[in-house]
Image (cartoon, rainbow, N blue to C red; front, side, top):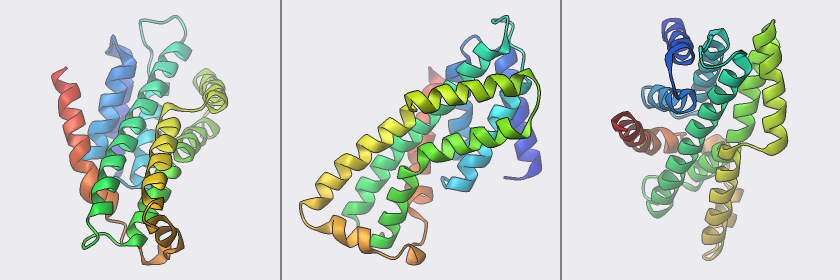
Length: 210
């Protein structure tokens, strides 16, 4: 993500907090739409999350006396967007599992690892923003992150459920063991980017119409 794209996303998030009457929903839509324009891979997701939360921290919602409530809604929006990434990944993984010609065990292992790491990526992205800033917004953000880490994110819960179901299905024919033994260094890294982006575009279109 270029510096111009990052600045644009921060400004969009700030404007959302300032103007939206449904911050959670509109932040979720903003993140999903941003991801459809890039690559569905950890570094791109991280950059998107950080740009959005920085913008949200700079906002000042007229709905709330304190920006903590607005930030909480923004974080819930981020969580909801990542839950949709997880759901899109489920569909991409199911398709990839049935398409052995195009997707190897190495690709599947990498995609499943990315899905497993989704929640930690979420928290790491938020914590980096909180640790790099100062002031009331950063203090509020740190407290909100700690609370969400204690309760668990929706995205993390969804990812865990998806992986549990996939493991059960793959164990039936012994494929899971082959995938687990695969060498990650040989993964092409195309699974998420090739399939999930199209699914997320559909999600973004649906949200826009709503």
